[in-house]
Each structure stands twice: as C-alpha cells, then as structure tokens.
Length: 251
Image (cartoon, rainbow, N blue to C red; front, side, top):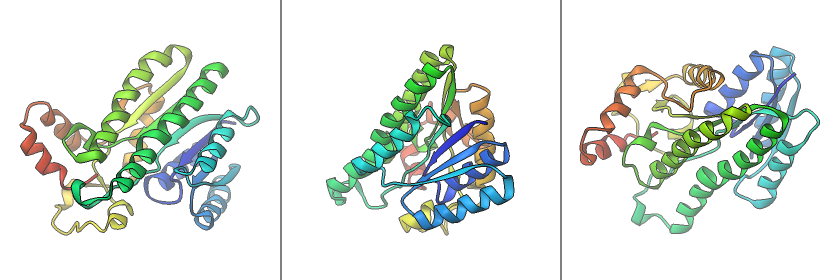
C-alpha cells in the first residue's frame, strides 16, 4: 500500500487531493493547522475508501511544525511515496501597503516549506527507488503578479529542473498550475470575485484529476484546462502590462 502526504489538506484543493488519492487506494497523511477539520476528513476518507489515515496537525511556518512533517516523510515505516505541497495563501493588499513581515511569512509558506519538504522527500524517495512530488503552483507563476506570482514561478522552475534531475532515479516532480478554482482560497483573501466571468473558473475535482494524471505520467508541468494553457502561451508573447492586468484576477 502506498502513502500520500498532503499539506493544506483541510480545505480546497488539498481536500480534493486527499479524496482522489484515497479513492485510488493510497493511504493518506493529512497536514494542516485545523486539527478538527483534519479529523473529520480522516473519518470520511476511511469510511468511504477503507484507507488508513493519519492526522498530523502542524503550522508549517513554525519550525517545530515543519520538523514534524519532515520527520514523517523520513520515516521508513509506511514510507511516503507521494508528497503534495499544497499549503498556501495569497495577500490582497498592494505590495508597498503590506507589512514586509507578512510578505516574508507568505514566502516562507510558498517557497521555503516546499523547498524543505521537497528536499526531504526527493532524497528519501531516491534512496527508496521512486516516488512523486506534486507542487501546487499557479498560472500566476507565468505572469507578472507580485511576490505571490514570483513564488509560484520559483515552484515551476524548481519542479522542471528537479524532474529532469531525479526522474532517472524514479522520482517525478510536477508543478501543477491552476487558474481560478472554486475553493475557499479567494474567500479567505476577501477578494471580490463578482466581476470575474463564470468561464474563468475551474472546479477542484477537474484540477486535481488532471494534476494527478500528469504527475503519474511523469510530466514536469501541468496546466489544467485548455483555456489556461492559452493564457500561458499568451504570456510568452504579450506585453507585461497586459498580463499584469490579467494577473489582478488572482490565482
């Protein structure tokens, strides 16, 4: 039996990753800060799919929380064979109006945490003979969009390199780059989405389905839906001014 560890598992894409992985027969380790939500999700997954679940409440920005998740990834008993780096959030206020400490905290979660957990997982998986690391990035990583977009661009670049470097040792590293998704993400940001057209939105099950299919097919970058693949292609030829305007729509 294989084991998947998902960060940010208590809501949004993280919850959907756990459901689809459990439906495919993977045991699941659930990581997030909300222990109550994790416990309810663990019960659901075990009841619906018969898989073994572990609840690991952790604040990944805190060193002790990050260390606890690293220790679980390094564990040889019931080894983690799939890591989904999904935890994250965005900041709505303008860059110069945001306290720099808030920017630093966001970058720790979006860059440092996947770096540390990815390093731990890739090393362990390469030693054991294989595994998958899925980094939840964003279409924002292809367009000018402040520190959030820059962090997501780092995930894309790192995943492309790591997939080339470690796939020969059995470790696939994939960056998943969704556009706008119906989750709690934008509501938590308090972003007004009323003027965003309906066709721009994707459903979480579709995003995760395409993400996992691409990851298990060995791809380095997955952009769910044709409409957002067009956006990515346009980002290579259109002026930054236009793409930055599109980037204001959010993840």
